Figure (cartoon, rainbow, N blue to C red):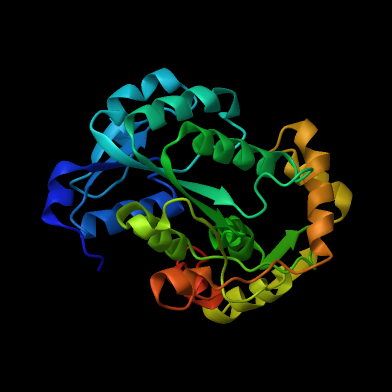
Length: 291
């Protein structure tokens, strides 16, 4: 447990955006255990399934004018941004946040701001630049691939036992959401992380076929991986990306498929324990996969 002075728990409040998501939800839980006052931003507070003791306030990052009530009395913010969906409002939203809070810990992505990195990395780069230019205390958590994204496989695993995805040779060092949250809480509560940018990964780079095998071993299900063609990938991406972003995403993924995603030691260096493995993540989510 981190050392948080009584004055901290009484006099400051931390706002968590994305509090109903995988990383934000764990940040909320960990902050509560540290005795910190926590507020959560939610578009639909009545539907937010959050622990008791959390002050849930209505607001939407895509509507900066709705943020004022949530920011009242807030000292620090754990910022999960709705990438691409709210970028038109980014400058005004960040202005309002950084005028009220003295520290922002932003959930970014490895490669943020790299030229020609594609729309998603451009979005993260935009947020990093706006936060840096505001003059606020900041820490950027650049996550690698999120293990939680593999929960999208759950229905196919339960229905057919076959996972079909593009770029089967892409080896990724997926990070457990618990590790992202653990580092995020330290950046919120400790002063030594101000101005730091951390690349956060899991302990091993695995291909999609290797990950499907691990899910099968943990759940006891006979599973198979099948690679999608590029045209099938385009159709899949169109279901969640605007058309103008699809080709750039495919090009960037083709590039990273040529080399494994790097593995960093940042989680262990910051938390004092090794990063959680992909197998440990599957064990934590075995029920989601029908195991």
